[in-house]
Image (cartoon, rainbow, N blue to C red; front, side):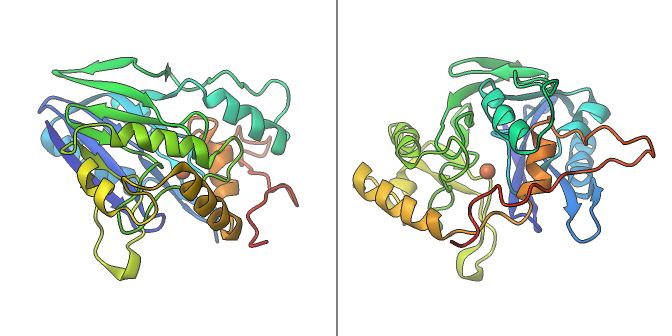
Length: 287
Ligand SMILES: [Fe+2]
């Protein structure tokens, strides 16, 4: 099994290609978005594609760990170019429902997981070539959040980050610090050598990008939750910290695209697609 990381500088997102030499999955790809001009591009996805093409890989599945609030997902690129089927957690409908209402997207907007191609739940498996992805429901950051286990590697999404940065925020709709604590305990119960791959790296102190850690290292060194941190300690810390955080810079453009499995809204009669900006609806304004 080969694992290749890609780092998107703008959003500090890590995308992974995992393959067996013939078949690959792509996890958490990015569609680039410039908030100043509202231009989208496939710069990051093209970088991933160059690798896939160099290795001659087929891509049966492209996977999101969750509905990201900090970048637009690149799922449609891999559907269009490789015929990949898009995959996410089956509870994504809960996220669609919350944001359908916030963005006033109308009763026809699906809240059942469409238009994702494959909705997957705890314990389900997807085969690709000689490898298998096992879905782990790891809620807390969002209720639908999944981590993905392939062999001895777990692709964490927004649960744990590198040990010197800590853990994901839990203040989005349906988020819960206590629930994330449980999800992390589940990860911590895995063998210490289990390899863990983070979805973001914010490079604390300006250090170089890192993407890989292990269960043992996290239990010893995670600055927000080590093997000895109690639920009470973690929840108190996380909730205090979240109350101080601003909303992610790209939450408004990202989330309304990501609940459409990364498709842009239908263009208006003039051929232009528009996003909405709901006023005074979101928290996280540095209250
Ligand atoms: Fe996230």
